[in-house]
Length: 193
Image (cartoon, rainbow, N blue to C red):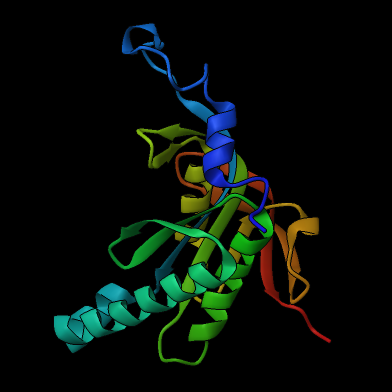
């Protein structure tokens, strides 16, 4: 049985009007405000790896990262929104599967000779041009990824949204260039026990 709520049905429920209006009757600019969980992840040390091993070796590493990212996304029910060179922007309609995607990908590459880092945030964003997102949670997730250490997930999320195999290792303040100190950021890691 299909779920009652899908991304397409959420967008349809959020739009103004029925969606069948004559073009002249639609508002000039209508952006949908939707709640999503955003996860940015990237390969750490990719530039140095490319310099040291050459672009062909780097492409093989990037292929593996993208293949695993897509495979885990399909299993978790989240979407690859866009590739960002050696990184990716993921979007989920629910926080837990998106957080699980980040933990899954990071654990997959643990001990593989290269590491992944991730930043996560949940909140309201505007759906822009049908396939992009604009807003504070998007920016925060990207910034958290940029300051995360290799193998680390920094998340702005509710503890209740964590899968049972991840835990909060510590709650920190993160100093983000151009933004300042952001509190209540959770550093996530595997649950012990």
